[in-house]
Length: 148
Image (tube, rainbow, N blue to C red; front, side):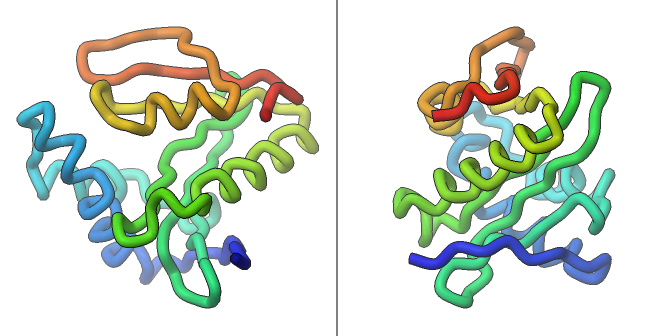
């Protein structure tokens, strides 16, 4: 399967917020925290097209990834794959690409994951280590060159 990352444009914000809502719904419902407006605002509130890319599988947009600079290096702020395309290796392919970019820049990578989300196991499988737990989220770090 061919996976590419394509730059997002400012006008993509609304459709990407819709995608985030679809991808997050199950995890948020599990915690009784599903609020469509809040879930959309989490992406729209700090949307920056220059840090956002579409995940494209076989020519079809199936997800999004947002990597932005932060104090510790890079923040993997969002990684969402449409539910119809999950568990097909797409997220792993995107992660490998993000790792290569972070390693090239010699930057540490940080990510947060909603507690009870399956993404926690995904990040641990990909070499992140848990560094902090908050009320609703777990925070992970991946040091330079520490991927799979």
